[in-house]
Length: 313
Image 1 (spheres, rainbow, N blue to C red):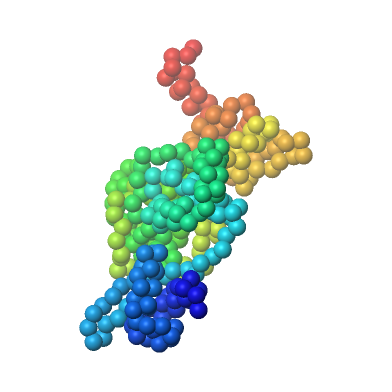
Image 2: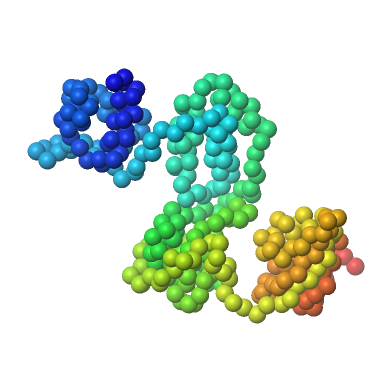
């Protein structure tokens, strides 16, 4: 058996066994213990997380991280994966920032020089821009693990008006406009709520008994509690359609005609009237809001405030 083939099979074997001795591997592969020791040293240098323990019950074991077997990527696939991870550099916080950096390092280390040169050229010609935020969200890994394992966390959360402890059971985390959010069941409010991750000052395990929320995920859980809704209708020209396509709170209510124009028909929460008033004012004459009257009144009031602020007559 060639050395390269033996190393590959050895990597798969130690990942499967998790705990072993040099003598066991030497017998299984039909080589000397010295050869196995050299092979294990090479695997360790390649990134296989091996741990040795001396003594009568000692040996080697693989740390908790599992190593996937080598996967052959085409040049185009490798470039696609590289830029998918490279695009994450705009985020100040990630739930797997160290791992993302490690993947990029491994990719560039084992790529051929011509592929590296191609990527260097592409770096200046393709990008995925997201707003760079100063806000930090250090508890993303904790929130993500809790969502996967359905654990309850006690968080120190700072909302707009107060700071207090909350007991939450995360459903998932997502990013929007450079900020991270956690959708979770809040035990204090007995409802699904959305929490800004950069406003979480601590997150530790809670003794609160978790609810059975395995069926819930980001795709089917409500993003806000059931509140008073207002019927929305607005006409859009082509530019207005494009503006509303970028607003997650409206895209599901967007209808597009064959000529590219469209309309909004649905509902908005009454508490979000000011938010949408500012949004539609920003869209300008590309949108014509028909109702609700509460939204129209809010837009007029906000425009009056702006006129006073800038001393317009």
